[in-house]
Length: 200
Ligand SMILES: N[C@@H](CCC(=O)N[C@@H](CS)C(=O)NCC(=O)O)C(=O)O
Image 1 (spheres, rainbow, N blue to C red):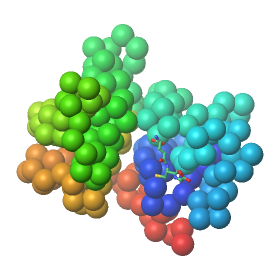
Image 2: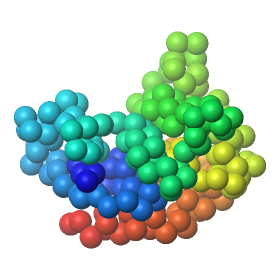
Image 3: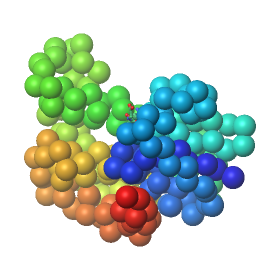
Image 4: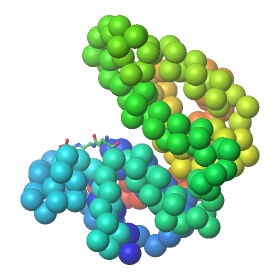
């Protein structure tokens, strides 16, 4: 059975959400970050980066929330969270899965740190380009790939939710607001948030 190593109010929410969407049984193992449990040798054997989330499934271990989303989607094809190999939508699906760590997170970080980066050198170009491109991607809706919700919406939906509602880094645009609200209305995300809320 899948074991999710997680902590509340972290990027673990991505993993909780995708697992709830998949509807598959999983066990949660809470890592106490304040107590430094992420640095234990036991946990580092699962994620040498000493960060949550991380997941095991028998002998398999995977960390990085985007990779966890991809793994869960492929391990549970019946949930329809990823286009099959060879499907034309698979290219964009992979692109948006990787866009979070490749473009959105570094764009957030440079904005937080108020650091100017040459757009030709920065993996994300510049902050406005990232969110202009995302706006065009979510505009047709309801999801990134159209009618079908996928694991890529877990990554992008939470980035936009956090960027707009929590960090207040991304100016609210009507298209983003509507997309984030659709994400927040999903029962699986509500269950994931309830799991977090119950964890004191
Ligand atoms: N790139 C990783 C980032 C994971 C990450 O930064 N996790 C933070 C919580 S959001 C963490 O475990 N921090 C504890 C620490 O670094 O000691 C992912 O997407 O999963």
